[in-house]
Length: 343
Image 1 (spheres, rainbow, N blue to C red):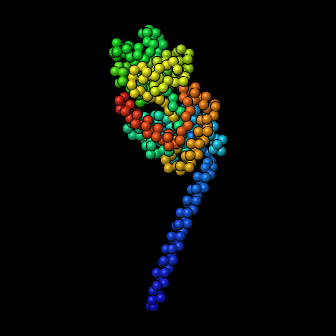
Image 2: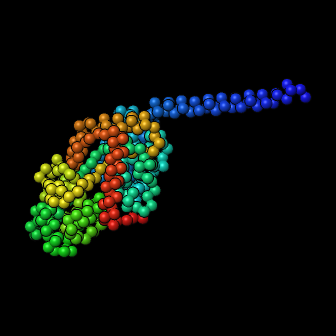
Image 3: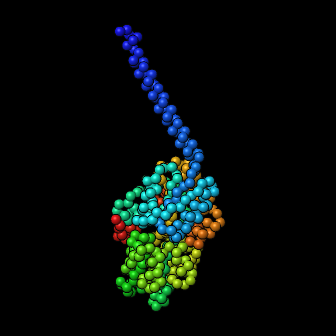
């Protein structure tokens, strides 16, 4: 066989290989172009907005208001779905496992992204690695409120008075919360540790039953979300002794902080914000962040946040991500201190 004939198969293989590489390159270029088009056209269909708690609470109410407000800048409907359970873990995990295309969001909170990682032994998601932080919505102080009859009977007018009573009557106090590992529970345990007092914790199935227990005198005090307690404080049904943040709340200017009462390093708040799935393109995250920032700047939204004791402070997605990491570090210590643990 001639050398020319022997060379043909080699040339044929070379040609086939070249065509395959060209096809692969073309496919890759097409995929990149398609991805770019998807980002540019986002959103081209309705967006799911998961609320990992039951309907009716402050977080759910705000999520629904924002869903309407971002519809304009995004040009698509944002559909709120309540997926409650396991302290918010079920709804959050749905978003962690969603397609990373920006069409599934979650209204995360201090529980889902800062407390639960240390509270649950088998959390199904990583609050940092499995999410893209989109926008912080609000940070709301918690407030220490006491049963008014108990306060009058024992001449308790301040947190210092409550601490003095606890030290004079070891084991006599109890406090309620919305459940083991809740923000109210952790705030109570932190107060006990920092003030050197004893108080029995009574967990209830949610903040509302805990409020009813306080009003009826079944519990002596509780740490509650300011948005939920504000009407009770205004009507004189409970007495506010201190807020848990570094600064006083604009809603309760006359109520000191826990730090002002002499308890150092006490800075806890209830916050919630929007997250999407890890891997969503940065351009899409930026679009979502801009839409929520625009919504948070509207007067009626700002007024709603003010009634909750929060001043809207729109942040970048990067700043929100850093905030979440700092909150995780804070609550790691607090959960360890409380000894709370859930399976």
